[in-house]
Length: 281
Ligand code: ATR
Image (cartoon, rainbow, N blue to C red; front, side, top):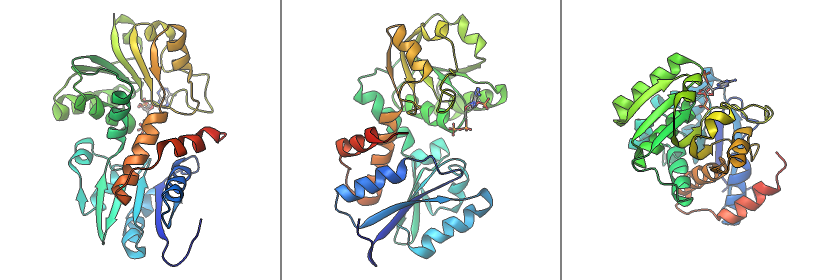
């Protein structure tokens, strides 16, 4: 990689930020597209968010990804926010368009595209979302754009489950109820089961948000976690012979959409996938 006075700077802000795969993905993408650009991580504390955003303009940084915990709070510092990012209430991609900071959300498209790519029918189906945080909200928006009929939100904190189900009903216009994990045992059939919690993520790979007796009711299981590649939840699905998908494609798709917003072109998926597959998480 050549770094000189013309190198464009991109990066990611979040806290903590050490685990992010985005620098690996985007630097490989810049290199394979012969772009004189570099992507770095910035560990930004909440109290420094405003200064960090002003710094994007001041330093002429070209683009920024935003991750936990800043995706919602960043919105008030931007000059323009896309309709989709407004709907979900979170921005994960900022483009510095000649001093105008534009906010986008590529998590939703990343998720819904992965469903399409794998031929998962969502139209008219029911879905259970495990979790009620930012990722669960992106999943809910993605499912609603894909035509889901009803959503059941199950979460440890009842209050957060209630908040998300109210949002789904009021903002997305989808039938929704919120339940506890135990309530899921009462369900007869689940068309689509999505894990949007962090339960089962490395290093806690021996945990699953629900047991096999819930998984067995599902026709399709999606775990948005990509590390490990096969969570305990997905191994239950496999054991029961149920189609399943991990979060790898969603990760690649959201990164590709950010890359396209910044550069106008898609990156080469297979180059990026090969690099990620070689990485020892
Ligand atoms: P993100 O932006 O990744 O969604 P988040 O907003 O912090 O992050 O949400 C994390 C989700 O994982 C929440 O649904 C959280 O449940 P609570 O709302 O009850 O906290 C869920 N989660 C995290 N650790 C969990 C655990 N040990 N058991 C059950 N749920 C857990």
